[in-house]
Image 1 (cartoon, rainbow, N blue to C red):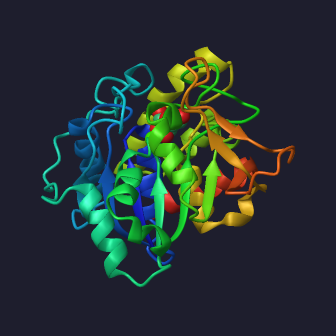
Image 2 (cartoon, protein in one colour):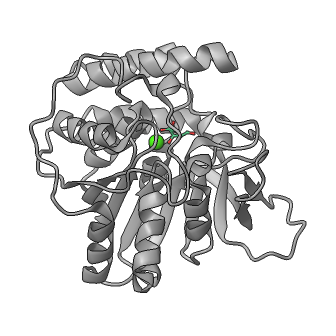
Image 3 (cartoon, rainbow, N blue to C red):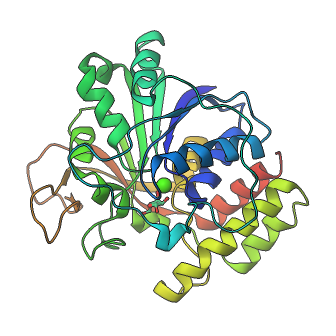
Amino acid sequence: PRKIIIDTDPGQDDAFAILLALASPDELEVLGVTAVAGNVPLPLTERNARIICELAGRRDVKVFAGCDRPLKRKLVTAEHVHGKTGLDGPEMVEPRMELQAQHAVDFLVETLRREAPGTVTLCPLGPLTNIAAAFLKAPDVVSRVQEIVLMGGAYFEVGNITPAAEFNIYVDPEAAEVVFRAGVPLVVMPLDVTHKVLTTRARVEKIRNLGSEVGRVAAAWADFFERFDVAKYGSEGGPLHDPCVVAYLLKPELFSGRLINVEIETLSELTLGMTVADWWGVTDRKANAYFVGDVDAQGFFDLLTERLGRL
Ligand code: BDR
Ligand code: CA
């Protein structure tokens, strides 16, 4: 299986991504889950990460706490989307599995130095603070990363936290700039893709009808998450952003995009955190990201539901 580290700020959609990865041990070996401040503050994201691993029956997964705020800015959170805990919806009990003592950034550095070069893939699902902090602290690990597959940014769909920016990039644009300029093979799942994978009634019922605890809890998360987006975007169902990252690792043929140049706006107040994506190739700037533009949404949900059924 391919070795991955999931860097996350759970978040109901982060939870789907982690469950999908843990349900797919033949393809993916989760070396660790690193929590970062984002949707909610760090004490909640690391707690939520443990709740999700426990739900999957995987107390053995190593969960680390990382950066509690962006590299240079004050933390912006998204309780208006994810609720006070970040995982609002179903009743959840406090996790019993322990948090690892090591800092997530040190875990990232140590793991990339220990594993053979080009064998560890990073899967960031939140602000890029932990990844950038690791690259800044230990530049020698950058070239050892196999690939980064991340959820963040937007092009045609533009912003969800400001008119110009997507949440994960907006929260820590300086970190995003470090990652996008690192020279590591990069796959980006922007809102353009994630706004196509909608939790319609029929899709959520299939998950609920799995008849398992995972199915019941995941459906309740989808119900909660949806309340926000239906009112906002007028679509049936909410966008399941983060599991697109894991689905891409499992079935890349579900997705299509373009290898293009993407730069991060870090200066303008108006468009801070914008992913300036050269989709039409109008500059000579070097391509640095495979920017995904389309997805087979039903294929995605078939994969997700089948895998959740294994837990
Ligand atoms: C991203 O922001 C968070 O709210 C979600 O978990 C996702 O990672 C979408 O913009
Ligand atoms: Ca997230």
